Length: 345
Image 1 (tube, rainbow, N blue to C red):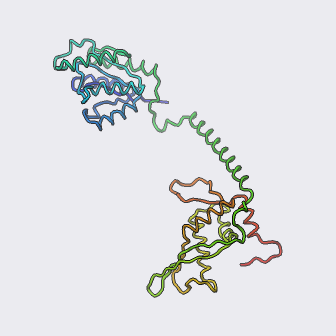
Image 2 (tube, helix red, strand yellow):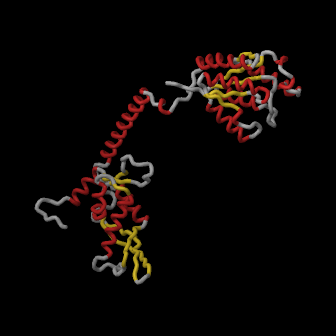
Image 3 (cartoon, rainbow, N blue to C red):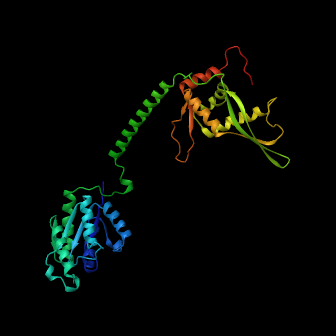
């Protein structure tokens, strides 16, 4: 697999423009991706946050020391030294390139401040405790970087970067297939365990012919006026199961189940003797959230239903319900027609 490595180049800038250009060219010829201060203006806290992020994403770190310590923070440390310390802290492989003859550097490319010169000496000593190479000029630096980085890569393997279309190797595909098989096996075991747990209903909870009062809001329209009334309807748990059960033989979303029950309740409003208004137009009925929640909780407590397990689109946020084995058996006893009995339309 063809990997490319991101290499962070750290140095002062104005006095080492040609040297940095030579280093970048050397990195590009090695198919590496150079990154450095060219992208970020110094002396800005927000930019320092960005610089740290780039260092964190880099595979290797190179620091080039010339004749200047560089601009400093309020704490009196240069940004170049801050970058170096951060790379070392992260455990990124580092290599230093130190000017061979500091006394030969033109005066215009050296620090005028004795304090800055002293800090540069201290920083140079710190860098030289690790792997370093001396350089004489830009061309020499470029060749030293090429040889040094090849050695650094060989002895310090890093993740690197690959093209997206090359990231999925045959080995990776095999690993993913193996993991998917394990997941499917675990899901199957979980489903089997769940099914076994719900083989029988828990009749310690209200069920069968016992009833529940469901609160609903009935809305409609008459004589150019919107109308609204609230009341209750009484149902046995068997009737609720008969209405909703067939839709959960596979899996059904909660909005579909709720709408099904509301349609059933709306038809019951018009039965003879109902206390609900019956001369409205455009009738609609909405069961209260509390009543609907009570139905779901009760059916779950009875072990008649459980949550759906089918995979769906990420955009599908609905909750799905399905019958357990106990729920399926119970529905059969409610809805199946015995031999010899006429089926009611």
